[in-house]
Length: 301
Image (tube, rainbow, N blue to C red; front, top):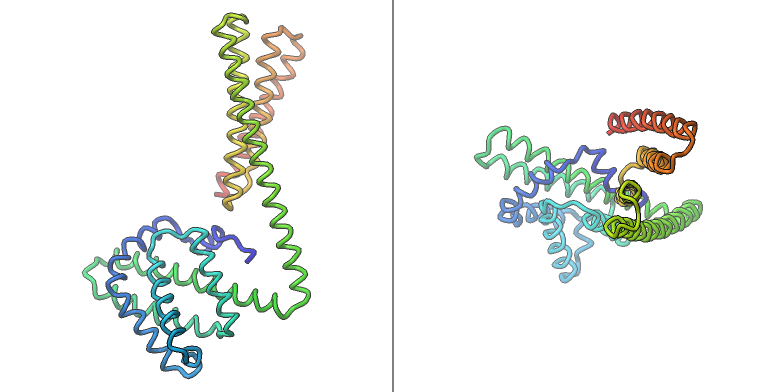
């Protein structure tokens, strides 16, 4: 699967609030799990097309138990990469056993109707009931989306030579990108440790009296600014690895902080006024650009 699960949830407007509603529904659904999955199992065994997959009693017992476990995971309140990977494995299993995606859609429909019937029999207010039904619908739709998309993609991978080549290229590119991201993270960790060491040296020199107080403070402040820059870069990279958007504002901020540090050093060294004026102008321009970029990014969010 080439899609990002975070983006899928964003497309469905699936928020933390929906996760919380589903988590609160778990005790009720644990109590009613047999009722819901019993309805699904009756349909499976009553349909000649689906019943043929369960001629073996041990397979039937294993699959029905797995279905019940997956049903309860819908109300775990946690929908991370592990949840997504399980949906992908379900889709791959359907390809392996040549299960028509229509049957998965029908099973989800039966589960949805059974759950809505259970919820309608509770004493919840209209507002609570509405929120529960919306959250339930979203997680079922997301699950069906991922499972069936995996099914279709795997079938293309098997039967289309062009798609095979494309998949191999995408898989190689993703692995290479992940490796480079790992290298970048390790490099940022090394830089962070280096800047921390430099900051410690500046503080030590300041308290030891080996440098003038003004020079020591400026030097320590410059090191602290560089530490802030490296931490921001690392946070941005971590957010990017989690599927977040790439923020250009961080790099503009790096340039701004670096220029501020240069101006502080130039002032301390009594550089010619033209140099200081140039740095001040650069700070003003970078500050304006930083404001524009952050404003644009906040609107996009």
